[in-house]
Length: 198
Length: 420
Image 1 (cartoon, rainbow over the protein chains, first blue to last red):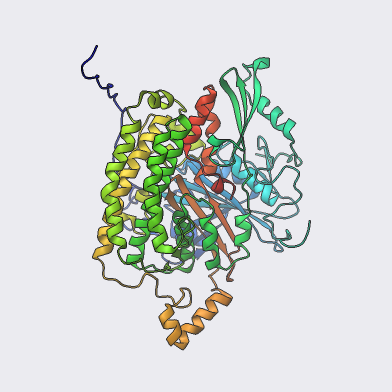
Image 2: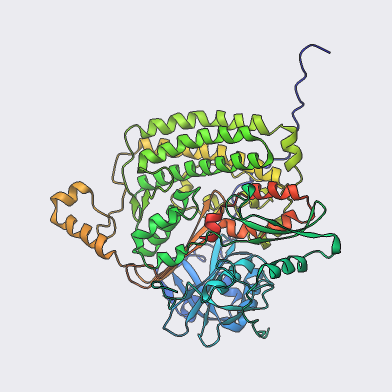
């Protein structure tokens, strides 16, 4: 008893790794430099985009499935058919784009096809992003769910269903997420009234 | 894979939510389990998050988050505003890092317009963004510690946060909803004495961060509550879309500031702290270390900013950026531009962009679609908390109910940005 109190032992704060540094990024092209140069100008159309950068991993993976392509503002957009979105997601996942970032819709009302779904998928190794687009006619706003490929798409698909009314076949629990469960209509559609009384 | 017939729209009531919670249970609990409603008005849910928990005794069998209580339709509102009028809306999405939201939106529209921001404005944007990150992490630390029972830390954290908010107020006139960044640059020149003020703050901060660590890091109660709790593996983190500090605490070596630099982040030298523990403790350690790195970036940005000649903080784009007041009052051209921008907005070339930046909570992305008019056709925000919330069940399953509170604190969610 007495004397100075012994201080509490300071425990080891645990392993604290420092990052080994940035990812090395994509390998240079097979025949030296200059192979992986991104075009400065915007390119439209599947053939033109595929001819301009055949070395791109997403393009190589979606050679069969893509029906249209766009390279604009240094961003790659590949349009796939409605039936093949899950297959396209698996293909880009196998090509290294393994991080699902975002899914949302754009309502082009009154144009047809009305609904554009935009899937943003990132590759942590390649440090690249690819946008997969699916166009849906207003007659049948249904598309396959990709929750089997990325479970993180769950909330995003519920959000698109809630706010745009697009149905995702095979989703484990497609219910409203933002609006109250008894809400009528889909607020982010362009024909949803923004004034007046309900 | 042939498309399956879509289920008709389900309108769930509270009974359905409970049935759903039971249905998603692990099955081992059986009749011993009970369903517990937590929130939306609960002090530890950091806003209005509602959780429906199925518990067996004290352990969590399943958990379902119910969100949407703060849904204000910001994405819809954006479609009715001119591009420059969207800036104040972006502040209000994530009220703990308004500058980060505004920066992300401005970068996206600048990418659509293909205009370059002056280097001086970029440096100031980085400086303020890192200050925002520090103040956001201070709120996280204070509330996280308070949830677990360490009240003192909260008061200490808000002391420093207040100082940062005073700087924001001096810059923009607002403590939180600053709207200080504009499309094409920055709204106002910083006030006199700004650099000295920030320098004083940066001199103090490392010592203060050490002070918080002294209160918590070696505290046996703190360690007992958070070590080994809320484990998230690297594979689960990728599968569930987790980004930012929770992902780095699970061993994902990814930081957009370093790996896909924006706004001139390639100019600064900083380390990206990672950990492979994947628990609440690792998230705490990573965020504390991140605050130190942010102080480091702030210092480099401040040195760069003070050494630059005092040039304009806006891009040379008179049809997009509002003219200086002085010019507007003396030059006819400037007056016309001012009038046109305010009354008609400016047309943005048709196209779509996705711009992602590293917010204090993870990857924040703005998807802006233009149809060539002065109002955005569609603005969508990819918010880190929205994705991270999906991982909550994985982190809490099989753990004690009290651990849920620690885990919610550790993922640092802001309901304003989840619901938008």
